[in-house]
Image 1: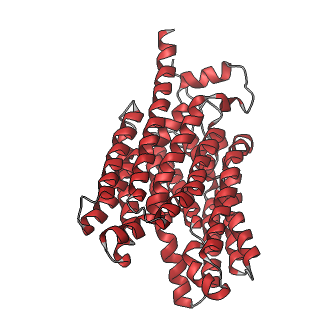
Image 2: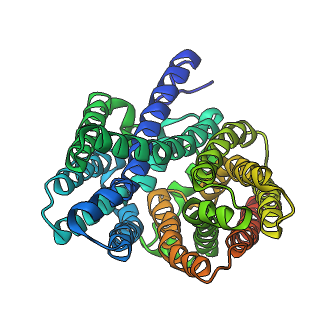
Image 3: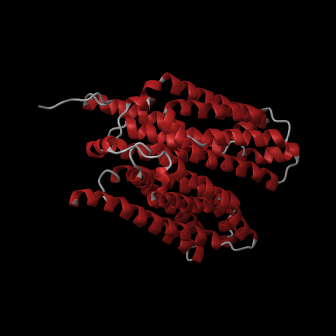
Length: 423
């Protein structure tokens, strides 16, 4: 006799509708977090004009954002596992709205630092929140697509923020109005999340890790909340995020001036390479969303894609392409990184012990914040030393180191899968 359990998926049409709704909401929320990474940087020229700050002083605002976000991200996973993801999501969006008001009413540097820190606090819990909700609310067959949308929305948030913030500041002649509009956008997204809160309730979901694993988790003796830190897979995932983010930081911040110096291409043209890189990454994530449910050894997909991107970036560094083709090749490197994205997120899910997903994602994704914090000054110093090709060689090398980390994680997951079957 077949028994039924009360899960979110009552019938295939209902399941599809519910999955699409949850994935869309999480995509919107994640896009807002990436948008607020860029709350202040597009306004730096306006802040220099009004306050006379140097770029070094303004760069500290970015560093403060990522320091608060990185520390908070590692800690927020514990909170998500204890109280649930949905209330933390609402809190994070409220922090973004507050940060926009603080920035828009700032009278000096201290207030801008406060705005950056509050925005970092809001950004901190997003990955534990997002992946906890996706893993609990989305059916296994569509989880890869959920990861794909999650990654794409982040890229779109990065791409939208400069146009939104600088565009409003230019149109109105006031960077303060731009900040307040950013705050209003966060409040609108918060209202959408509250209105659709039933689709975000992770307490009513079911872990999509398989019945056997779920039964084993129930039967197992409860572990200490910090026990997951003893798992080598957690720290290998952390290192993978650190290295892949170092590569991203090099391209996102320094590819444009490096290409300008190497090939003599106008800055107005080289500035488009980051947009192209992000768009190619978004296309790659769509492709990766279909691959992730069809491939067992995900680390192989990650390795092939990242190695291909590393080769393209190294060729640009060697100067084998003419100027415009070098820009195109740099942008195409984002395609491989995008394809690897959903496989990366699924690999972390498989490496996480049952019931500790929030803590694992919080710890692992703090490697992203650390990567941004440490890579920017290193690659900036290389550019100051006129080591222009080093931007691309360094980015490629970071991807290769990320491949090594992903390979070890995949091997560990495969060993864990085989062991019960042979016992």
